[in-house]
Amino acid sequence: MPSSFFIRKAQLRDAAEILALITELAVYEKAPNAVVVSLSEFEMHGWGENPLFTSWVAVTDGQVVGMT
Image 1 (cartoon, rainbow, N blue to C red):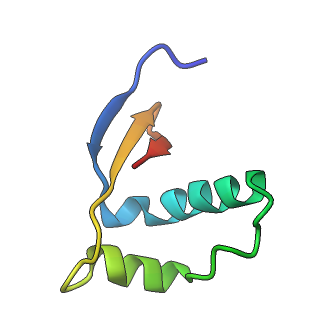
Image 2: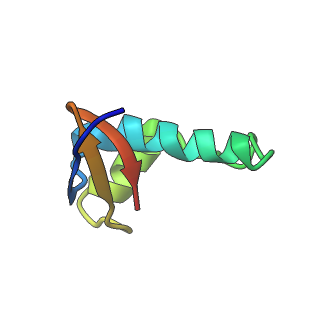
């Protein structure tokens, strides 16, 4: 288990890992088909010209391990 992590504002390069965490949560909640957004749509809506959301990530050993 990692001994430390840090939190930072999510960047475009984190999009795939964030979407994977969202999908993992949907599977855990027995709703694997609930995530219908593609990676390119997710990137556009989060980091495009007019972002619709902001996200923060928890990072340890260079890997995103949590998000809001």
